Image (cartoon, rainbow, N blue to C red):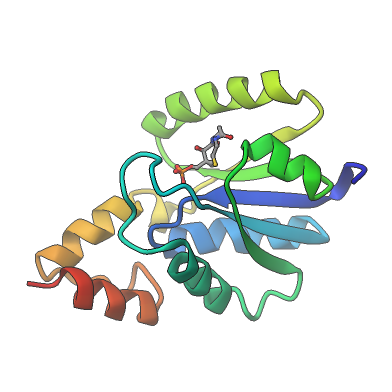
Length: 165
Ligand code: PNS
């Protein structure tokens, strides 16, 4: 498919999706005509995920149901290959802190080497989500912390069911 500057991919593992991810997806959906959320579906990558790809896709799909130009699908190829196959010219990611910057700079250079035609675009995290990451939410859920303001209700309920003590 020919690259299209109106289409963007928002990639991630989303284990599980948080309001921080949804903030970035929502802002991307206002910037591009079409946003494809790419959910990593590689069971062996970075260890096992808590939720299956189907569950993670379901959470993102439900949470973005009101965003008419957003679709959600799994991918298990190189990210730039997924973006190219969908005709996207941009990969949109959120950036929270210096620690994200180092990782994203590395990913950016790897991705650029693979396909220099696809640009990565970084949206600064909204201040209220700048501390938020999926692993932190899982830790809070494990020890009975309050997570309803960090993830959608169905995600919070599932986290409590899986991890709550
Ligand atoms: O931090 P995340 O959510 O686990 O990020 C996932 C992803 C795919 C966005 C990140 O690892 C990345 O940019 N990877 C580039 C290299 C690549 O294509 N890996 C294959 C993933 S299926």
